Amino acid sequence: MTISRIPSREAVIISVADAPLIDGMLATPASPVAAQALVAHAALRQAGLTVGDVDGLLTAGTWGVPGVGQMPTIALGEYLGIVPRFFDGTNIGGAAFESHVGHAAMAIESGQCDVALITYGSTQKSDRSRSLGGRPPALGMQFETPFGLPTPVGGYAMAAMRHMHEFGTTRDQLADIAVAARQWAALNPAATMRAPIQIKDVLDSPKISDPLHVLDACLVTDGAGALVMTTAEHAKALGVTPVYLRGFGEAHTHWSIASMPDVARLTSAERSGRDAFAMAGIGHDAIDLAMVYDSFTITVILTLEALGFCARGEGGAFAGSQRVGPGGVFPLNTNGGGLSFAHPGMYGLFLLIEAVRQLRGEAGARQIPGAQTAIVHGTGGTLSSGATCILSRS
Image 1 (cartoon, rainbow, N blue to C red):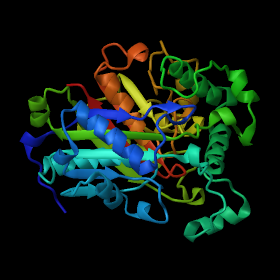
Image 2 (cartoon, rainbow, N blue to C red; image 1 turned 90 degrees about the horizontal axis):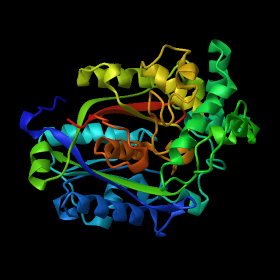
Image 3 (tube, one colour; image 1 turned 90 degrees about the vertical axis):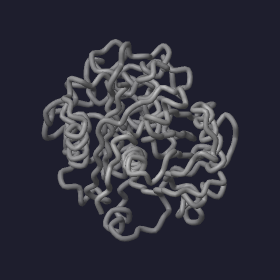
């Protein structure tokens, strides 16, 4: 289906909100749906809107599955009292929300909705429900789960080991990414883990799936976030500062790690990044800030290579020596990322929230001076899916 774009309806992001955490759990205890309602109202208030203005609803998650979570936009719409003209429950894992931004932009620009609300919520830490163990293997998972592969860390560990074998990537280079994330988190009062760490601390932390250690892995926390989009014209009328979506791409390649085309190459990110840069019409040197999904330290290395910021095999060196930390030449995951800020199961929406705050100059002590353009890339599943957004202040 071809969707006609209406030039006067350029889609923009106008507000974001996330729920405060205490020790990784919601500061205001709530169900996943109630938590989404709280942040949705907060984001809408910030833009001078109410739920009555929302006619586009997008969400994803594993809350209430099996059950109401199988139809997340219906469940959330009922809870919020929204009857949307446009809705999208696309779930490709942690990359879903970058996809939602692209899909909402198409809907807004083609006149299918005027105000789109994107949300996510999880109480996985409070519920102690992150583990994927205990579920019967089905479809492709029958070839992995019964043989003891831990999901998802086992697949990421295989990718890390293969990358080390092919390109000489070191454990120190992996650990350096976790150290940089913690340095950013130290500047973020909302981050879950702020105590400083060194490479030795990462390597001395318990090994969970060779070569990955506990501090190579994302946190397990609760979380809720919301993002609101509308037209640039409407944003001007509301008197809010818009953030523009300049480029977008999405792709997925496999479900089980055994079917990944190349376990040391993130093909989905290569494709989504290529499309996003082509749509934006800019080069890599125009990027001031990168928000890259960091489910594990290896995810960052693979993504930077796939997006074209360095050649294949050079991701470890590119991100090493604290080049991506505070004061470095390539600011990355400035809120502390999934490794130190929070990781409520699906993290992609929080990448977008931080990018918007940076581009609007609202990041406080961690603010990147003069940030105008950001790339945001989400990864889902076991290196399965990717979605890329290029955002700009102007």
